[in-house]
Length: 263
Ligand code: PEP
Image (cartoon, rainbow, N blue to C red):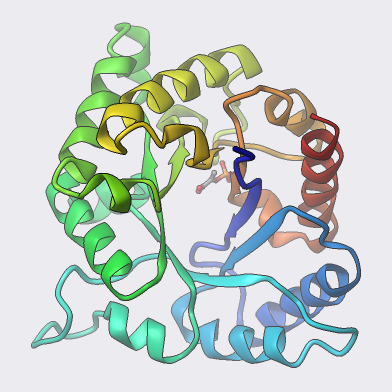
């Protein structure tokens, strides 16, 4: 089974309406002509999602297959949760995926794997692609506990799902010490954890882990992506800083295309 290769960009709380429009225009223009087999996913801030969906639909050079993702969603379907955004809202506007469990949400908003698991379940119920983030903090790596940490995260968040549901999740391994720090896991460090994650997913997915895309995230950029994407259990990247510059993000797509098509 050939696992999908995905390059996903998380814009976080960056860009304004004009910058977001320009960045999307560059990505849509490139992808319509050149995207190949690699799936591009783009996660702009909430206020720019509708415009991004429209830009993808109206791609001038032909059909663009970019999937627009949200960076978060609420774990309830609706209700009195001022300021929150629900999965049905996202679906109704053509958003196709959602990042959940990002380490910044865990750290600044106290998100637990129990809550993240409910978000994953709701996203699947409504047909959106969950991109589930996990990864250890610096001290947990230094103390050699990173496997335990990642295992607990995955089992807590995904353990209540059916095997068929688990098989539909995209996982992003994002060591917290590598996010936005300029420090990157070496390809060997990343591959070791990706293989471990795949083994953990094997039982949870009823043996379908080979088909689950596991993305690497953490200061991934064109300068270091070749080695990372070349690893067998790494199926692409979740990109922060480098996703804000169209040329860099497109270069990451090209590297993924080259390496994974040759594999
Ligand atoms: C991220 O926030 O998911 C991320 C990987 O960020 P960066 O690429 O900037 O480290």
